[in-house]
Length: 156
Image (cartoon, rainbow, N blue to C red; front, side, top):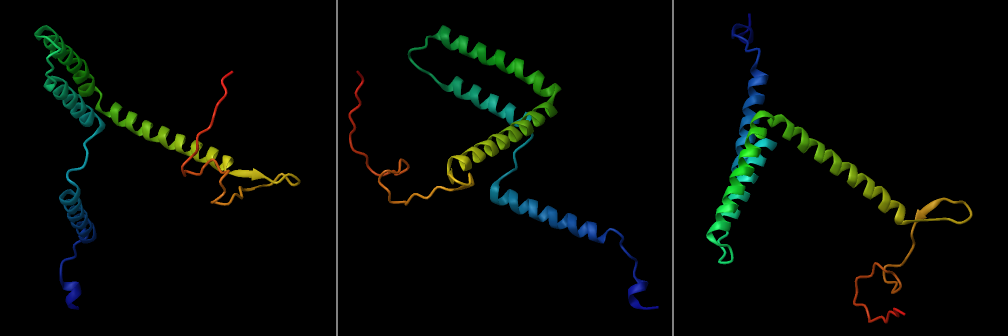
């Protein structure tokens, strides 16, 4: 029997090595970028707290004591309305955040598609589309960001 077969075999050596690598990479990222964001529910709770703190810290002479008390009461009511919803349904906010990301991706796709149609012209005879051929230094190009002269607009 050889030496290699005499040693006990660790069946999870690969999994252990991967876990160690992942842990070290996560530690490196935390050191470089700070802690990762929490769940959507935790982030909403932080947002409510930050807005409440900011509104509470606004001390203007225009607001009297009664108005400041009303603002504090509104903050307490908003927080008491939001907290139970966050506590009961934290996964809902994760789903809403994912849905928002999907809607944003769909919007970007639609806008990019429309922009590509705007920047193409059709060839009259064949109907084939081709990129617009305007020289970059054409002064008639409305995309030119150079200085523009004054233009009289007749409103009559």
